[in-house]
Length: 172
Image (tube, rainbow, N blue to C red; front, top):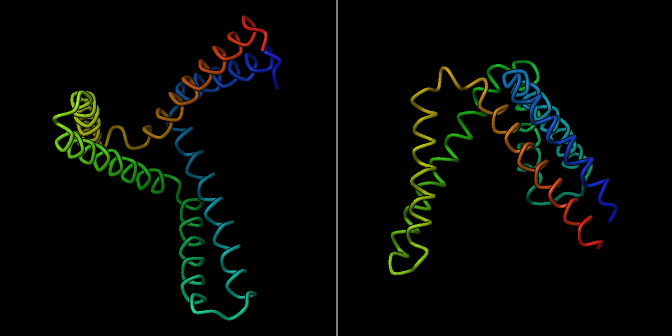
């Protein structure tokens, strides 16, 4: 796909969808939760099917348990998208805090390196972002996933537009 217009078109669509996602972040968050719930349910059914139809092996019980857990999570997210969105926001916040702390610890171990300050700044900003989300959890919990998804679409869309323009200018 070397046609630069295709890349610019895809990028423009992604950018537009990012604006729409940011325009109603709560609806976007709920849609993400329902879609993720559907994927969990499908994965759970597939895991259960594999556990029941496969040959006997030592991990069959764990396969069935994991399939049941995945199915229950999926059904829960689909049936209760508000609660699912809050749960996913807690999970994302936990990942932000954990990754920030890990980066701070890595920066401390690399304090003799020139990259120390960049890693320290990255970890500190991530921990502060996680702390800000926790401090305002009631206000932001239903919109955080939509905001993050919208920003991701904007950045990816702009990147693809830039890539398409690069292809046009360099005729690759």
